[in-house]
Image (tube, rainbow, N blue to C red; front, top):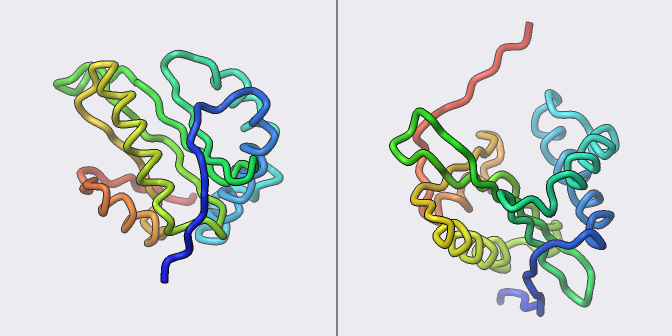
Length: 159
């Protein structure tokens, strides 16, 4: 039987920044465990905090948080970007989604994605892109379940 929790989704506010940074550290550790190319969470906090503080209130960004019992349990970041090479000159970029481990598989990402899709649509966006690590099979599967299909591959070479 699927666990049920009560949560709310809301636009992130400055007061949510410390909790978002803590979740971002967990996300960085998750990616580092998959691939040591990525830095551990504590090594990313300062840069992420600066980035978040600078962009949390920009109109081209939409940051959402999921809260359960007033605790931030997930965060999502979406951005409207210019793309001179695409037919649509502006595209939606679903750039980050992270749900704390104890709250995964409860539909939180689907609910957040629905809100962000509405936000993109309200801004005339017709295409949404995202990047997901190929080694993150849970993430790949989740995005495929929401209708995303691979269309490009990012490659790296360690020298």
